[in-house]
Structure formats: C-alpha cells, structure tokens
Image (cartoon, rainbow, N blue to C red):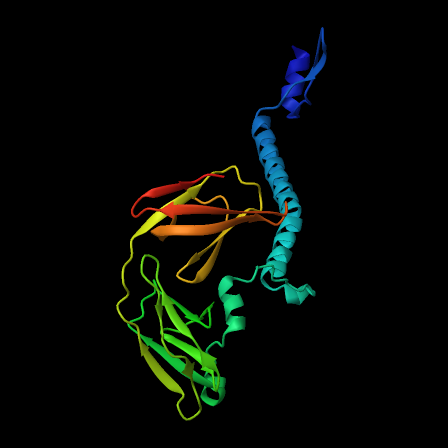
Length: 256
C-alpha cells in the first residue's frame, strides 16, 4: 500500500513493462499506439507506390524510344541515312507506257499529236500498231510523222480495224476517230484439264491476233468457232498441235 501511494503522488508515468511468457517476452503497448502504426504504414505504402511508378516509367522509356525510332525509319528513312527501296514490280501499264508515248503536256505541244476516240467506253481496248495503247481519258498521244495502225477490241464483240493508217504532223496534230458500234459475236467458254505440267501454254489465233494463255484454263471466254492451237512447254521442250471447237453459250472442255 505504501509503494502504490508513492507512485501516484510523484506523478511519474511508469515505463511499459515486459510480460514474460512461455514463448518469450512481449512488450505492452500504450493506448493510442495503433494510430501511430497506421500512419506509419500509410506513409510507407505511399513511398512504395512512388518508387514503383518511377521504376515503371524507367522500364517503359526504352520501349518509347524504340517506337519513336521505328516510326522515323518507316516514314522518314532518309533522316537516319536509310535509302528506301521500291520493290514493287512494274505493272503492265508501266510497261505499256514505255512502248507508247504518255501524255506530257510540255512535250505534246511540240513533238506529239493527239488521237481522240469518240464513242469510247472503258470496256474497250485500243491497240496501236498491235500494242495496247495507254489512254489519257479518250486520247492517245502519238509522235509526229509516223504511221500508225489502229484497232478497237472488246470482249464478246468483233474487233474493229481502221482501214487506213494514221500519220500526225505538226500541221495536222489532232485527229478524232469515231468508233462505230461493234458487232456482237457469240462466245463460249473453254476449260482445260488440270494435268498439264507447270510451264505449259496454249497458243491460238482470234481474228488474226495471236493469243497465248498459260495452262490450265478455267472458263476462258472466247468467240465461238473452231480453232487450231499449239500446246508448248519450254521447260520440257515439248510441242504438239490440237484442234478444238468452242460452241456458243456453252462450256467447252479441252483434254490434255
């Protein structure tokens, strides 16, 4: 009793005592210590999140740089010293352009004439000296002082050939040709066997025009009639002649 009264009268707060148990010592906790621990945990969690965000931003930085470089290489290769190659194969139109003059306004005024096709429609094909012409609208640009033979072809119709040749000069540089109404012809379809060796071709003539097709064929539309054809294979060095008939509005089969 005397000890307890002395402690109370002095006003001093005793330090936390330690309770001994079977598993070791355990410190007692003052009232209010839970709040201190929770605040400390919140601060630690916030600090961890900041560290994680910094680490994430650092880890993403190489990817962002790589993506930016890839975009520069793709869209502006010349900025990084890379020469972009054009691997696109030349189209048929490009090849035809090399054979026949193409519209060049500056040159056309001085060295070319204009051949205009009236009644032309996109399903038609214009041929000049046996080669498919490169039209600009309904015009074909031709060099002066040269002879040109003109024909018009359309699938399912009889080809039209101009009787006389054309010559354009600096004095007569413009000429309009009126394409007549083409005569419709009966057509059929030819299909061949699939047993032909790779590289095989068939060659025959339609209205004086040599036609060469790679085999096999499937529903190839040609004018009705009888044909003499040659089947060749340059790889095997073989050649043989055949005769076949195309009946109008029917599918016709050619055996190998």
